[in-house]
Length: 331
View 1: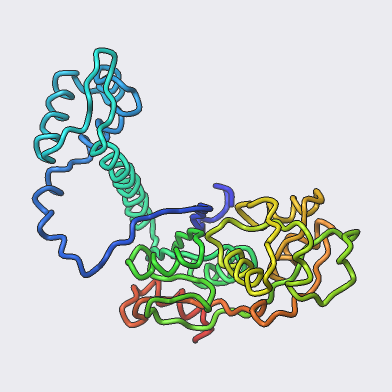
View 2 (view 1 turned 90 degrees about the horizontal axis):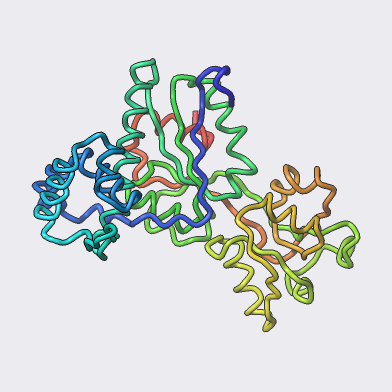
């Protein structure tokens, strides 16, 4: 969506292999409040600058702070944390293990603060609410664009922050409160989350029209195991299920390459690197326009249900409640 279009935008932040920490909502974080109050953003920005510039002088110049003031801020930070963050060398500074840990969280905190500023600015421009959604790749490619377009048509003053994660990451993220709504495969361990039906789809075997299996379907997965296969990343539910099926058949899975998404699967199949499992709706969006061929897969596990998961529908924000009802087809 271009800047010239109405600001009915959706933030796409896809990551193939995300690794966010799982936050236990039952943990009492109040004991950390004195420390959190001393972690000001200016000092964290300086800390990140020192890491990236390797010297205090260069970092101070980048942050427009006097070197003496920058040195004092870092010393105060180390004192408050009770650990050494850097090893000082004549030619620069390198992180200690504690510094590595702080760097990871400091960057996340600064990104979150920037996102907060953007969202608050949008509220001032008339936005009525933000909804954070985690979804697996199948739902993002096959269904969500049209569903979100119709949602925004009725609620142009809302924003959706959509992030791609594998099913396991969707469940853990929603359970930890990192997002209000998740969309994932229904055959996963949903960790007690409420699940409502979203879509049914079925996996098929993607191949070139000149592949030996083309026109031989419907196929069982066992019949595909003599051929090289292209797989989604190892955290995907499709890859996990194909591994289980190969093991149950007593055959090795001839995995030739892992790729991060369905577009990459289609391109590598097109290049004759192998065959792949792909949902039928994704084939219609990506594979058919590329001249590829799909054979039905007859295994029972190839029939899948996608579900919308939330922790507690009654506790959703008003914006999230609107989106939840839209996705599950409630009036």
